[in-house]
Image 1 (cartoon, helix red, strand yellow):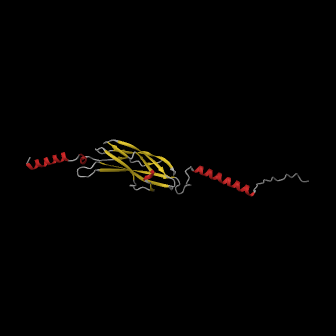
Image 2 (cartoon, rainbow, N blue to C red):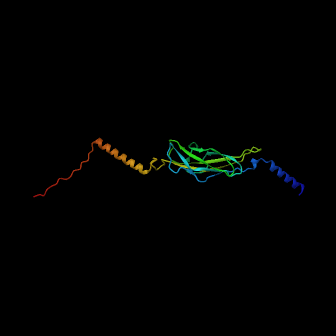
Image 3 (cartoon, helix red, strand yellow):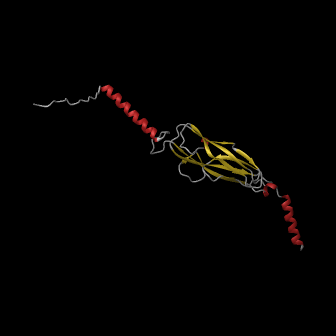
Length: 200
């Protein structure tokens, strides 16, 4: 081995020894692929548990602190689900390599929200500490979240089933007719034809 090859090998070994551990570490994050949702049609002014729980796993080889947020990234139909409607518990998780966690997601739907479909994403991002060069290595991944708010176009806009709406509407019509009949003095008279005997 010539002197040049020896010098190059020495430099490579020195760089590997002196290189900060954070620069050698791989930061990774994995999340569930199944969209989060509420199985039923939600009603403004109520709180719901979103299913399934948000799945988070450290796919890197470095212990990483992940921060969760709600931000629309994917192309989905419907209006944007606002971050203030979603509560994540907890909002940060520190995971060792290969460790995973389940994060509970609650939906607080305020009053006055219009009917229709709403969508966004729950994003998990993590970063290793900055090395000597001041550069931090990070990664992020997202899972969609979708909900349907009661009162969509083409429906009656009530949170109860259709048959309940029909029964209530029929009862209301009957009560209205009865009140009108009493007010105008309407009376139904049924006359029976007089019996006539045989003629001579």
